[in-house]
Each structure stands twice: as C-alpha cells, then as structure tokens.
Amino acid sequence: MKKLIITAIFLFSINALYSQYQVGGTGESIDRAREVNRMTKLNNFSLDRMQKSKLSFFLEDEWQGGVMFASDSSTINGFSYRYNIYTDQVELRSLVDPGSIKMLTIGTKKFVYSTFLNNENIEDAGYFELISNGECKLLLRRQIEFTRASGDIEAYGANESTKIDEKLFIKKGEDVAVELVKSKEFLRDFISDKEQAVEYLDEKLVIFLTEKKIKEIIDYYNNI
Image 1 (cartoon, rainbow, N blue to C red):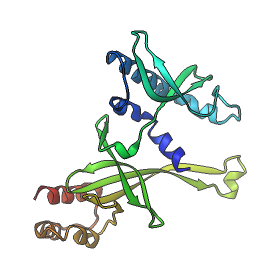
Image 2 (image 1 turned 135 degrees about the vertical axis):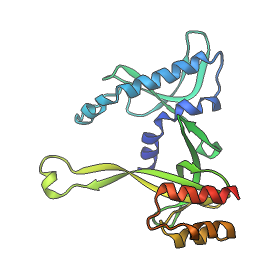
Image 3 (image 1 turned 90 degrees about the vertical axis):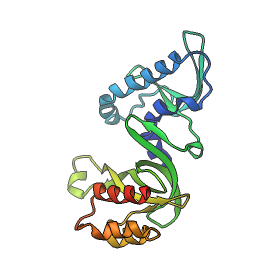
C-alpha cells in the first residue's frame, strides 16, 4: 500500500527529476516527455469513469521499463511506461532512487526525502514538502487516508472513502523527522538549544499555533 501511495502522489515528479537520468541529444526530448505527462494530467477527469468499471483500461496493468526514441534521434532512459487504451496515451513514471535526492522542486514547492517516525513510532522514510529550510526543517507530510464507510453508505455501493491527510513534521540536522505537536511546550523543548529562539517564542502571545506561526518561529531559529 505504501508503494502505491508514493506512486500515486509522485507520478508527476518526472517534471523535476529528468536531469538525473541518461539523456542523449537536446533538451527538446525532455520537453516532449513533459508534454506527454501534462496531457495525461489533462485527461485525469476520465479516471473517475475508469474507476467505476472493473475492466482494465491498460494494455498491461503493470508498469514496464522502456526507452523513448525521439524524432531528433535522441533517447530517454530511466522511465517505466504503460499504455492507456481508454485515453489513448502512453503514461510514464519516473524510476527514482529517493535516497539520492537532496531536494527537488515541483512548480513553486520544494520536496525532500527523509526518514521519520511513523504513527507506530517506527522509523520510516518518505517525501515531505519543505516549509522552512535550515538547521531545523519544518516539513509537511501528505498521505492518502482510507476510511471504511458506514453501513448505510455501503448500501449504495460505496465501501470506503479517501482523503489527503496532512501533518507537520520537524527535523534537526540529520536526525529522524518527528511529528510536530502544536503546543508551545513542544516547540520550546525542540528549540531549547538557542536561548534567543526560546525568548522569541515566549514573547509571542500564541493561543493557537498555526502553520504560519510555527514557520515564523522556525525561520527565526534558523536565522540566529
């Protein structure tokens, strides 16, 4: 399930990661790859219709390795593909070693891959949006959450619902990222190695710690 979630969320990461792969020829090939991915996303509205059918809309359900031969005689390696018969498109997924990623940008957002403690207090690893960077990193973790439907909803043919769950994490240096508890006590303990930062936090008349206020405090910590 974890692999499926990561695949679903980061299918679009090809746009930022193309430079890690073996590319021959000009940058025009990369532009073509981007266009293929963009067109796939433009047709995502059709996925709802596809999911209502038990029929497979792909020539092969599994992603398969391949090579893209461009019209300018260049080649692009390092991707896996599958052919979507319904949308008449070739979809591609990046084959990224996340351990080799220091940071990547997608549009205006920045992402890092980091170890973290999950809900069971077991060390895990995954992608985070980088909210504040520096000695102390403020990170946003997204996951797909599945909720079992109640009996009355199941009667209409739906047995579960999904939503994107977002949680803030905090990470110092190379330490494992931990989920951030939105309390002044938690933050005070985490930034206690810098007295100025603690004083800055105590001076704030904070009742509710929003993401914006937490970022302000972490930014201050990183800048002193």
